[in-house]
Amino acid sequence: AAGVIQSPRHLIKEKRETATLKCYPIPRHDTVYWYQQGPGQDPQFLISFYEKMQSDKGSIPDRFSAQQFSDYHSELNMSSLELGDSALYFCASSLTRQLTSGRGNIQYFGAGTRLSVL
Amino acid sequence: AQTVTQSQPEMSVQEAETVTLSCTYDTSESDYYLFWYKQPPSRQMILVIRQEAYKQQNATENRFSVNFQKAAKSFSLKISDSQLGDAAMYFCAYTENGATNKLIFGTGTLLAVQP
Image 1: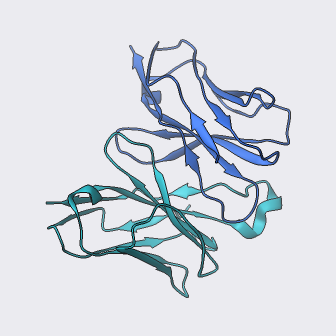
Image 2: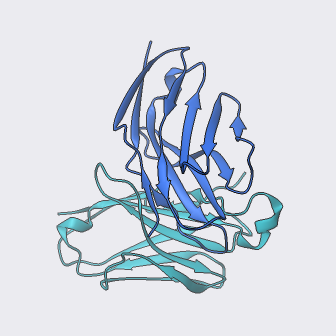
Image 3: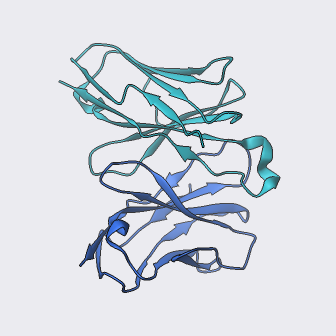
């Protein structure tokens, strides 16, 4: 079965540079979530999109922005990178429209993008 | 605000034995979901088991089962017949029932499986 695809898997950037992370959800999934996991920490919610509209926002810095496109893929844009942005960034997707099917609210995670800021 | 607490930073179990990982949560909601996710050294987040708050019956998935105590806001994971491949970080997570709700994770429990 198709899974959530994230690219790139690894990214190395310098301070103050810009990075773009991409996420391709499971086909027919309508909701995308972004999480940030720092070293030795639990994943922290950044932002989510439902049917291409932002649906929820967590502790996402103003330097970060995201969107979901017409084909449901999503991109997380990160500018003015700081050393503290070094982390594993996960994308997850779910099929919100089928909450009554018994599979609702299950988020399936991609393998993550490991961002290193030097 | 909802919180999830895992009080065991590390646990160890012998191969083929049983281990229980603890999780407590705090919420004022009555309708929500609880999850256990496994994160092996590859760092992939893998869903282990899910529990719907409105269901009294504890969820089971093969060797994995939960003890869900709604009144006590407790959600423990039992792993039976532990295998070397079970070694991983285990995260307990909470989300409210409804569209597009974020997962709130605990701090995780690192499980080691001894041969």
